[in-house]
Image (cartoon, rainbow, N blue to C red):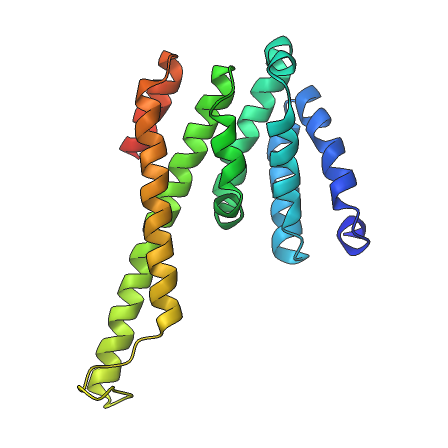
Length: 196
């Protein structure tokens, strides 16, 4: 709270990554803390800062400290589950982590991308259902119509649905590429992401 009110969240998030690497139990607690910062205190930058810190780690750091790498890998799907909209907004960091040499990070990114695809598809479907309901009720109630008698649907909602569709397609393409990963565990996570 104090960090978000005084613009010190970047300072705190840089301290969280080494702590998560050291203590395995912190991943879920940090994910919960970041979720609360984003939802209750309107400070969504913590997700971006932590992802940037993880993406900036060198391959040597990740290879040398296998326990810490595993702890960081556990945080990625956890935060994707808790804050999918923030993770979608910062998906460029996730995609950059797919080039990491350490398979546990790549596997966690694939798992997180699978969660984000499910969220995006569900959100896209809900928007389409909502638009159809609005259009049907507008036609039934004699609501706003254009010159041809067709109901006017909010253009921003249509643009959001189109953007979500493009995002979903891009994430599915990235997941499809992971079927050719050099590591069998990452390929297995990719299959798991497709199944779910």
